[in-house]
Amino acid sequence: SMDFIANQILLPLGGMLIAIFVGWFMKESLIKSEIGDINTTLYLMWRFFVKFVAPLCVGYIFYRQLF
Image 1: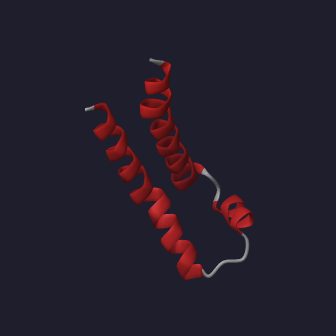
Image 2: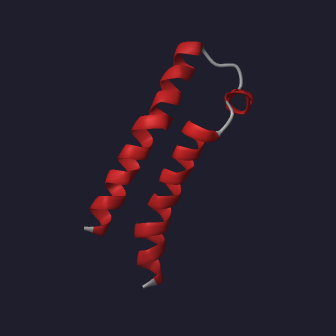
Image 3: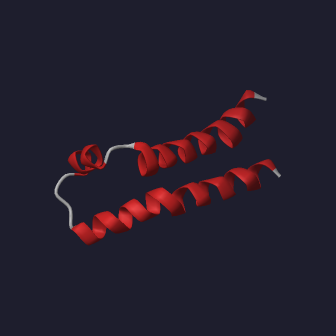
């Protein structure tokens, strides 16, 4: 049904694509302007999680919901 498609496919897929876009394609200057003044170490940790951890975790959730 449409509920399954929206909740089990589109939401996780959208989350994964947003994380990939922000982590890999969005300009660092734009990210920093949106986040504001933040500790450099904290920013680097956030960037790592958005770039690598978030897409993998959301991808795993997406996979588990389908199979």
